[in-house]
Image 1 (cartoon, rainbow, N blue to C red):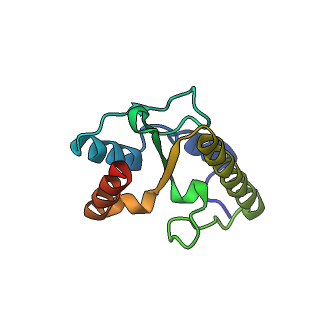
Image 2: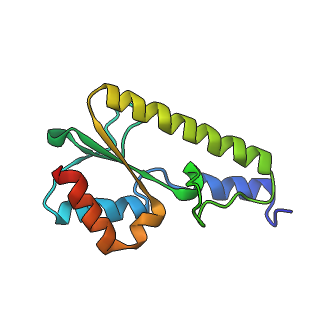
Length: 135
Protein backbone atom coordinates (compact mmCIF):
# COMPACT_ATOMS: atom_id res chain seq x y z
CA UNK A 1 0.00 0.00 0.00
CA UNK A 2 1.21 3.49 -0.83
CA UNK A 3 2.21 5.53 2.21
CA UNK A 4 1.11 8.78 0.57
CA UNK A 5 -2.41 9.97 -0.21
CA UNK A 6 -3.43 10.15 -3.86
CA UNK A 7 -3.15 13.94 -3.76
CA UNK A 8 0.35 13.95 -2.25
CA UNK A 9 1.53 11.20 -4.63
CA UNK A 10 0.14 13.14 -7.58
CA UNK A 11 1.88 16.33 -6.42
CA UNK A 12 5.15 14.44 -5.96
CA UNK A 13 5.00 12.82 -9.39
CA UNK A 14 4.05 16.16 -10.94
CA UNK A 15 7.36 17.61 -9.76
CA UNK A 16 9.39 15.08 -11.76
CA UNK A 17 11.21 17.11 -14.40
CA UNK A 18 11.19 16.27 -18.08
CA UNK A 19 13.99 18.65 -19.06
CA UNK A 20 17.20 19.54 -17.28
CA UNK A 21 17.42 16.28 -15.38
CA UNK A 22 20.69 15.31 -13.71
CA UNK A 23 21.50 12.61 -16.32
CA UNK A 24 20.80 15.08 -19.11
CA UNK A 25 23.03 17.73 -17.51
CA UNK A 26 25.85 15.19 -17.19
CA UNK A 27 25.62 14.33 -20.91
CA UNK A 28 25.50 18.02 -21.87
CA UNK A 29 28.50 18.95 -19.73
CA UNK A 30 30.56 16.09 -21.16
CA UNK A 31 29.65 16.92 -24.76
CA UNK A 32 30.53 20.55 -24.17
CA UNK A 33 33.82 19.64 -22.50
CA UNK A 34 34.65 17.49 -25.54
CA UNK A 35 34.23 20.60 -27.68
CA UNK A 36 30.83 19.88 -29.22
CA UNK A 37 28.13 22.50 -29.50
CA UNK A 38 24.51 21.52 -29.57
CA UNK A 39 20.93 22.62 -29.32
CA UNK A 40 18.47 21.52 -26.67
CA UNK A 41 14.96 20.15 -27.01
CA UNK A 42 14.31 21.13 -30.62
CA UNK A 43 10.57 21.16 -30.92
CA UNK A 44 10.71 20.98 -34.69
CA UNK A 45 12.06 17.41 -34.48
CA UNK A 46 10.00 14.33 -33.62
CA UNK A 47 10.01 13.65 -29.89
CA UNK A 48 11.82 16.91 -29.03
CA UNK A 49 15.25 15.24 -28.59
CA UNK A 50 17.22 16.18 -25.47
CA UNK A 51 20.52 17.04 -27.18
CA UNK A 52 20.79 17.85 -30.89
CA UNK A 53 24.00 18.21 -32.90
CA UNK A 54 22.62 19.82 -36.09
CA UNK A 55 25.90 19.97 -38.02
CA UNK A 56 26.54 16.25 -37.31
CA UNK A 57 22.87 15.26 -37.86
CA UNK A 58 22.97 13.39 -34.55
CA UNK A 59 20.61 13.42 -31.60
CA UNK A 60 20.92 12.00 -28.11
CA UNK A 61 17.88 10.91 -26.17
CA UNK A 62 18.62 10.73 -22.44
CA UNK A 63 16.26 8.14 -20.96
CA UNK A 64 15.38 7.72 -17.32
CA UNK A 65 15.68 4.02 -16.53
CA UNK A 66 12.38 3.89 -14.61
CA UNK A 67 10.28 6.00 -16.97
CA UNK A 68 11.50 4.36 -20.17
CA UNK A 69 11.68 0.80 -18.84
CA UNK A 70 15.40 -0.01 -19.13
CA UNK A 71 15.31 -3.79 -19.26
CA UNK A 72 17.56 -5.52 -16.73
CA UNK A 73 18.40 -2.28 -14.91
CA UNK A 74 18.07 -2.09 -11.14
CA UNK A 75 16.74 1.48 -11.47
CA UNK A 76 13.77 0.28 -13.51
CA UNK A 77 11.79 -1.57 -10.87
CA UNK A 78 8.01 -1.57 -11.12
CA UNK A 79 6.17 -0.16 -8.07
CA UNK A 80 4.27 -2.67 -5.98
CA UNK A 81 1.11 -0.54 -6.00
CA UNK A 82 -0.93 0.08 -9.15
CA UNK A 83 1.33 -2.34 -11.02
CA UNK A 84 -0.98 -2.59 -14.04
CA UNK A 85 -1.01 1.20 -14.42
CA UNK A 86 2.81 1.43 -14.30
CA UNK A 87 3.36 -1.48 -16.66
CA UNK A 88 1.01 0.13 -19.19
CA UNK A 89 2.59 3.58 -18.77
CA UNK A 90 6.14 2.29 -19.24
CA UNK A 91 5.12 0.18 -22.24
CA UNK A 92 3.46 3.22 -23.81
CA UNK A 93 6.69 5.18 -23.25
CA UNK A 94 8.70 2.40 -24.92
CA UNK A 95 6.37 2.37 -27.92
CA UNK A 96 6.61 6.15 -28.25
CA UNK A 97 10.43 5.96 -28.00
CA UNK A 98 10.51 3.43 -30.86
CA UNK A 99 8.20 5.58 -33.00
CA UNK A 100 10.27 8.73 -32.39
CA UNK A 101 13.52 6.91 -33.15
CA UNK A 102 12.09 5.59 -36.42
CA UNK A 103 10.79 9.04 -37.45
CA UNK A 104 14.17 10.65 -36.72
CA UNK A 105 16.01 7.97 -38.68
CA UNK A 106 13.63 8.44 -41.62
CA UNK A 107 14.55 12.14 -41.51
CA UNK A 108 18.25 11.16 -41.80
CA UNK A 109 19.21 11.72 -38.17
CA UNK A 110 21.55 9.39 -36.29
CA UNK A 111 19.83 8.58 -33.01
CA UNK A 112 21.52 7.50 -29.80
CA UNK A 113 19.94 6.68 -26.46
CA UNK A 114 21.85 7.14 -23.23
CA UNK A 115 20.32 5.60 -20.14
CA UNK A 116 20.30 7.24 -16.73
CA UNK A 117 22.38 4.39 -15.25
CA UNK A 118 25.08 4.96 -17.90
CA UNK A 119 25.61 8.51 -16.65
CA UNK A 120 26.96 7.20 -13.35
CA UNK A 121 30.26 6.06 -14.87
CA UNK A 122 31.67 9.33 -16.23
CA UNK A 123 34.90 7.97 -17.81
CA UNK A 124 32.98 5.27 -19.69
CA UNK A 125 30.29 7.75 -20.75
CA UNK A 126 32.94 10.19 -21.98
CA UNK A 127 34.54 7.50 -24.16
CA UNK A 128 31.13 6.53 -25.53
CA UNK A 129 30.20 10.13 -26.33
CA UNK A 130 33.52 10.71 -28.06
CA UNK A 131 32.97 7.57 -30.17
CA UNK A 132 29.34 8.48 -31.00
CA UNK A 133 30.14 12.01 -32.01
CA UNK A 134 33.29 11.38 -34.05
CA UNK A 135 31.97 8.52 -36.22
